[in-house]
Image (cartoon, rainbow, N blue to C red):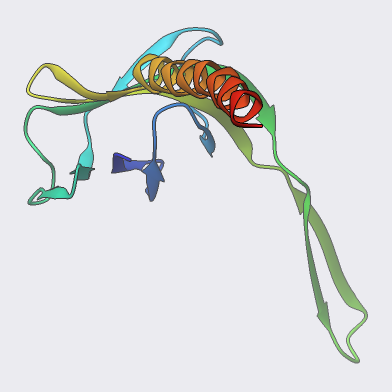
Length: 141
């Protein structure tokens, strides 16, 4: 399983292809594709590549699913014996980002479509193997 650590919105996020993540608001329309070039670390088949601070040529491609607002955070300030109270609320703007692929120097090392193909192949092989085992058991009885 391959993953990358990217920096977006002042935070570092560990991302994998085929998963979605809630990050700070990006100035991109929903259903649009975005390429993130601030990749700090890439791990692929046990090989780890670390940038100083970023890896040159490494990109993470994703699709913006939607924009929404996070849960409300209540900030309540009170000074005792002074009758001073302040109550404020804050809702952070969030972008839901689906990671499509992780690329190094122009070639995709991990992508969501490749993972789906591998899963489909393993499902087909197990489906083909199970009737054979049943016929072998029936023949031995």
